[in-house]
Figure (cartoon, rainbow, N blue to C red):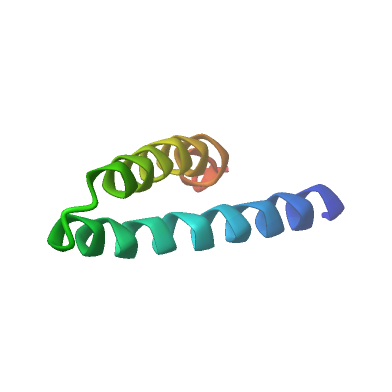
Length: 61
């Protein structure tokens, strides 16, 4: 139970970062800040992989 709580808190933190980067990416695109867009998309990709392995794949358990 304690391990589940720690994992859930970690997933919430990663999810907040994922959502913020997902919202920032189109803003950077409109402002033509391509360096920021690249960083935001990399953050979205990395956090998506983390959430997939640590949260989504554990739904069936």
